[in-house]
Image (cartoon, rainbow, N blue to C red; front, side, top):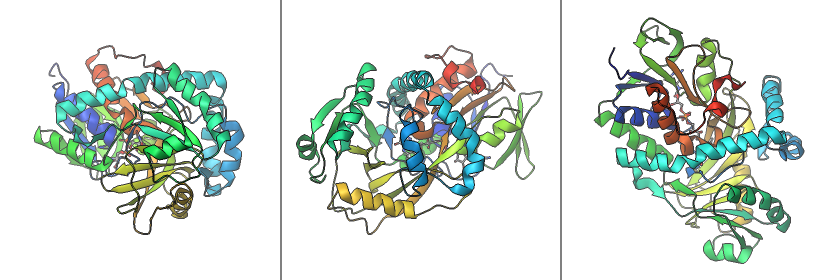
Length: 414
Ligand SMILES: Cc1cc2nc3c(=O)[nH]c(=O)nc-3n(C[C@H](O)[C@H](O)[C@H](O)COP(=O)(O)OP(=O)(O)OC[C@H]3O[C@@H](n4cnc5c(N)ncnc54)[C@H](O)[C@@H]3O)c2cc1C
């Protein structure tokens, strides 16, 4: 065996693609296996935020008060399909446990530690692959239309400042001066200059895939059925029965990773927070900055293909059909804050955030095999954290100590 082992990465979403680029740059022979086109699953249509300035997990003390009302509203920012409730209960109980103040503080520190490394890791990856031309560094606005909501947001902004992130509180008039297409209801908010976004997350995936092909990374079209430890490392079994012997394997199958880890005997409580959006090529309004409207539960991303209006968290598992009424509800809410919005024509999309109850990913060596590595569960931050996850994986595979303490992301934490 060569001193630098070859690596098979299962899943060519943004996490698998970024890991492939970093491992290839460090001299590994890399193969990506995916049952679909690279980047075409959840990484295709997300909101495009390089959200490294976020430090708040979804599982947080305040959620106890808000969640029950939200969950009962089928078109609200957080909903649960009644038919999915029994399957969802164990995840929900862990989520509530992760919302206790002490657990929440641990999650905040772990998100902040990972996110602090996110943008520098992307900058290295963009330089290495020549795919950085899509970065938009105009910051983001947190916008509210009720003074009481502004007051409730202040502790969150302070938490960001406590982690060294610049947050400038603004009046409604100051916000409208920066983004005149926001309507008169805007009461106030904050500008976070460090936030950035890319102009098209799917195009970024395609750019990275093209770079990988050009440098000889192999792409295998196949659906992975199971993994098993073998003499050479790991045996990968594809749905058609074909078997591949691998030295090292990375599971980066996003929301679909649970079955593969489970086949190795690791019961990871991975579920999916389904999210929705619509991308409007000619919205009749224009924004320079990424705009978050936490009070309404959606964001506005100004992208190359158009204005993307999206958000929402729906617990309904991996198989239920989309509920497109959620997109109509997003547009109705968006019109309240953006009166000039024309969303008559647009492309609707739903994606599957891969989510663990404590809002942290699993970035870990498998407990079942020293040759298998996990890289999934990045929930709301998969684009943000893809490059830093790739660097951590490359360090783990090389036996080097990663830059941050990895215990919060361990597969053994559940
Ligand atoms: C509405 C919405 C908005 C979001 N906004 C943001 C944002 O602004 N910023 C941010 O950082 N994140 C955001 N996210 C989250 C982000 O999109 C995800 O965390 C990220 O895309 C996950 O990437 P991934 O590579 O893990 O998974 P995916 O992109 O889902 O890729 C997994 C891949 O694995 C393949 N696969 C699965 N099972 C198998 C199998 N058995 N065999 C072979 N292949 C398999 C799939 O085909 C797929 O290509 C958002 C998500 C949603 C839904």
